[in-house]
Length: 324
Length: 168
Image 1: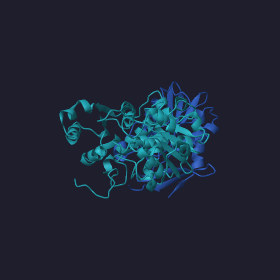
Image 2 (image 1 turned 120 degrees about the horizontal axis):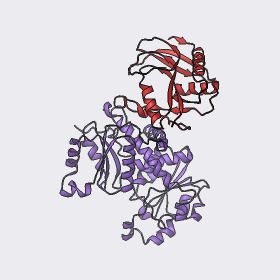
Image 3 (image 1 turned 90 degrees about the vertical axis):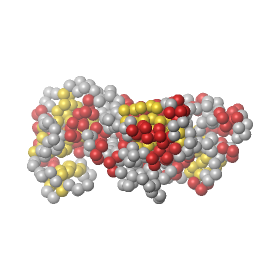
Image 4 (image 1 turned 135 degrees about the vertical axis):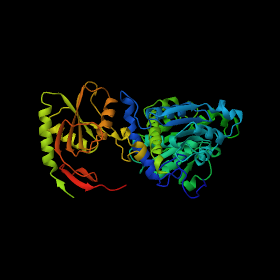
């Protein structure tokens, strides 16, 4: 099949979600439909039977070329609650280690009658490559690719904000931390912009800020106090340890002194501000335990909402099957 | 377009259901959206003390792989314990019986009811599954290309209209 330039690779000809590859380029109506559909999945976990039969008979393959226990587990729970058959492939230790190419792996799995691939890969763009390659009935969901995108995390963050703040129209949202290397930050910023959040702030030392934020309408703050003042939502990012070894940052202690979210600093934000974190947290590096476990923290609800949002994404993507 | 007197049909449904549930401790469950309106009216008129259960059967439909997911899914919510309950399932129009099957499948995922009865405003025939209502407001015969639509105006009055189905 020839690639069709100008056509959004995530949507089918009817403009419906077929693959979820990134939030960038996703119409607002589709983001809103994913969030609204997730509402219907929230209560299911409280019932005696926690599954619905929507994806019965479909095969979902979790392809994690990069480790992530939490994301893989929540995708697995989501697919199982939809009654799909779930297969987890430990890619690192299997065929790719023997030198098989990415697309050969995909061909083999497609021959095993996969209907959906959930892909995590260290290289940005790998899920796009797979999506271009698979048969028309197969769906690809990006579970995080390199520094590029982590769309389901972005969507569950939007679900969390919508749950606590109801409306995006008057919010100030601050994203704090290693924005340069963060696919979560990128997905969040695209989603927040698409949903019409009027004030977006990126808060980090200059060495951890990417170019082009201003053109996205994002205000750059290099001081935490300026960045979180009067904010409604604060999204803290994980500071990856390997950054500390390079020249980007002096030390964890100094980072905490300048950018760590403490209860004292949190008082600069609105009194009803919520604090989010995609996990896993480095307590005492980017966030003080008293904030992480405090009343304004919604970090654990994020995990719970993540299952409903992933159920929503899987079922909406699967429902475009016959319309390709 | 023909209009039926929905309020009159509702009154006969309510009267028949009242007789049916005399002496029973029933709980009402409405199928989204029309069934929920009806169940809420019936709850008041029959003095049922429990909150109406709401089912959106979108996640239980048997035509998902053909038609996809309904874009306007609403959360289901049942505040009472379904296990051992005496339940009246309420829907607006009974046709193929597939919605009722989906609704019963969903109900059983909340627990095992002691009994389920089915109350529908209109039975239009055309069954594709062995489903029979316990009480009916009115039985009508309409050709397959006509759909029976229940609407509710701002004052809560019900309206039934017959419309030619829009071809997809």
